[in-house]
Image (cartoon, rainbow, N blue to C red; front, side):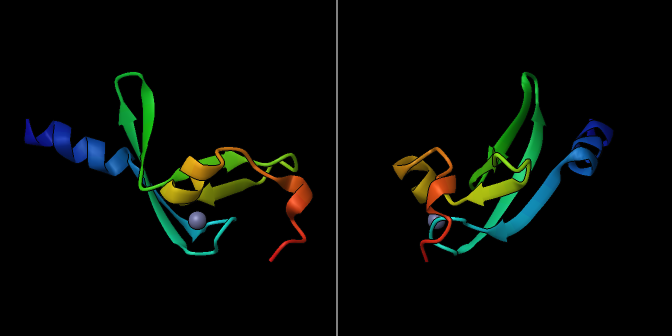
Length: 74
Ligand SMILES: [Zn+2]
């Protein structure tokens, strides 16, 4: 049983970055689940330029989409 838990921790990934909306630090745990994978602590999004962007839970709730057009906004 412990071995299985260790394997799960090994295969989980932590993404560290900044929220593209508010700029706060985002730490997202990507954990394998029975249906694929799950995200804890925020959301990962793929931009039109194929980059991975992170959003904190608050900003993701307010706007779950990427605003590529608003990239000039600070
Ligand atoms: Zn944010």
